[in-house]
Length: 363
Image (tube, rainbow, N blue to C red; front, side):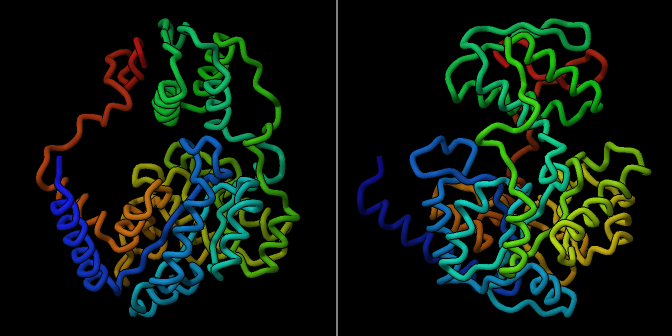
């Protein structure tokens, strides 16, 4: 166990290193991303407690130059990034952003971009990952057996953390299979659990309304596109790209009455979008697009592949490291010193049909 003196020395070292990294990277722009928010005291395993979010916004207001995404993109195009520039973004368009996060942003005068799934807002869609989550949250506390691809799978339902881990593995796997097969899988799991999935999102899963988005746009919030139905763009047909990307932009502009300049790729990893998707974004009239590829942004960063940092950490010290770029540096050093991960434990290889399946036992 560390002594008090050793702890103090470590804290001092990290604080000094944080200042050095902030200074060295002050002309790199950071784009932060958030998704879900929760009331204090509620389950925080899937959502950021609003008290934490307030701490983070207070930190940004006191130490960074927080600007709208359009200003950050303009700086990158001009080739000069002002010191400590940060933009805040939120994906999907859940109702608690409006009720919980917006008052915090108002308090600290922080602008934000909200990337919305237009069919979700319209009431035509309940995103499939949320339907998986609903099933696993309400599943019985016993082993559940279902069939997928001609083979039985046994899922052991334990406590809340176990269920979440199981659900995350199956959701990640479901991202890799065709839509029809994914829907069949969801139906099989729900049937095995004895759960009827509601036709529309219940409390805790609901989106904002067009009226709320109009109010935010009138207040100066940036409303961006996140496709109509949140497909992984690298997995849909080329002719669908126009409908998802340009159609989302048209939906927002028609219902909100604002120009839509920015786009966020669903899922957003490098393998989740293609050059054809980037072309479709530019052709639709968006001025910039963001990914979920972790990194800082420089004038050399492609304007339709801007990096973002997932900032939904549960700790202010870690948040400070993320914003400064120290966490990026640490990750880069680790990847250079350690062998590549063998799948990260989310799924295990299966020779059946040549795809990875979550482990059958205890998955």
